[in-house]
Image 1 (cartoon, rainbow, N blue to C red):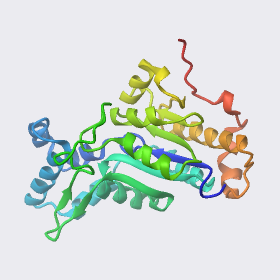
Image 2 (cartoon, one colour):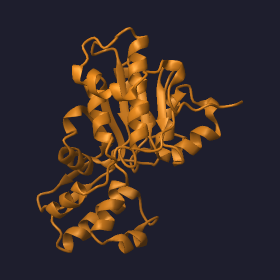
Image 3 (cartoon, rainbow, N blue to C red):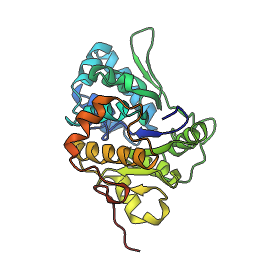
Length: 279
């Protein structure tokens, strides 16, 4: 597949790649749950997280304490092989997340996954000269709203990120994976030939299934990391077959290891976990 063709796999991060919300994980593990509860709904999310990181720093916790907490984040055992296999197949892997870049990159580096992603779209997070973690919104809504009427948080419309990725990569098929309310808007922007993988019984799944005719892409639910791996790899293989790629220029390890356990490789009309909707 050439750089302008092929497949782009776009992952949400929290509760999709990892099994929790990274913000909540850090707050809970460092003993700031009560303070979080006090601040919740009193200010914008990113402002709240920035304030909590300030208070965590002032209590005496270092950036290394935060890093060590992030290294313990739970992840399903099949997520790492799924990402490695998708990359080995020649897919362009991206992250679009409402977490922050410090948390995401720290976790990906620890898991050995950072090199597989060409792009991370998320809120800025950096360590300042005092050694304190700062967290900022990716979109400064105090200066101008992003204008989306879908249920997107004010600091980030993932639909606008997908729109930009589509403009930059017009010939790539997109597979989008997510779980939250913020993953609904990008799902609406997917086109014919694209695929959306909502996590079953999570908010984006409920939004999609409540009015599925609004989604142009094919819908494939998943429950856990094992499901994610099987559905994603089956989709990639099916799209490649339709495009006539037949594993040309594909890492041999991907073909010999990852697809063999799927036994029969499905065609595009018989993918596992495809959502059947009666109108």
